[in-house]
Length: 348
Image (tube, rainbow, N blue to C red; front, side):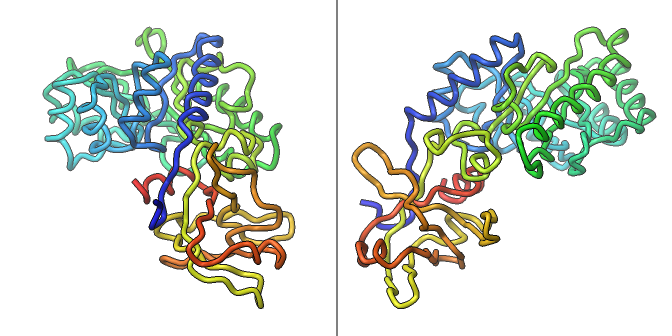
């Protein structure tokens, strides 16, 4: 068992995380369209369906094809539309309710020329994260996109969408919730600008830290958190979850032990865990925390033990001498990932 790095999933924790977020959205009278890029799994998708989820978010056309093939028929691709995939987009839009994301009048015009089926169009807004999306002052561009949708029988203007990825740079709960509040005010202004002409438009908001920490989500018409399904050390450091909420761990074989330098080597490196890391209070880079696997799942992190560096296949664990002496090559240790989205993608 576990001859190589293997992603282990605690489905009871997954279901608990899903149910908690679903209930919060329902209590806030906010539509729940979870992002499936974290798990990319039809099996985990069924746990969402069990909770009542019937609309989802993905990050690529290929991911939309995958989940469409597993019975999901209301999908938003929350990534700027790739015009080179028009054949695949048209095929999807002919089978399901599909929403696309645009951040330029050019893309909207090209879609107007190329789409063969009715497709929802969201305008992506930049809330200050500065990844993609239009800024608040770019009203001329949004006017052009809305006008293009208004003149098309196939482009259905759905409203505005944003991802508040800048919460990951926040230092505490108050900063995270402040970003959320500022984003809500920005999106409200955009919606008010067009609501009289397009009365059905909505504001769609995505972000796990703020959606986890906020008591209510009713400032948005729709939420799209994704990472909450598994959580990870990044979310723990932000205060969005507890260790007990983290629903995935990577089982890694121990291959070498070096007592003289307080280190052991795992078969589990950057191609399994990713290169994502955190800094602890002492400024050390943390690529994962180490746990013991047991019949009930896994333990809390072993005090003082952490993944101190990774190369392609190697993971180097720093550990106190007396704890290190308990392990030999051939043992299995678990690593709580820094970023579960990347780890799950790497380990499929």
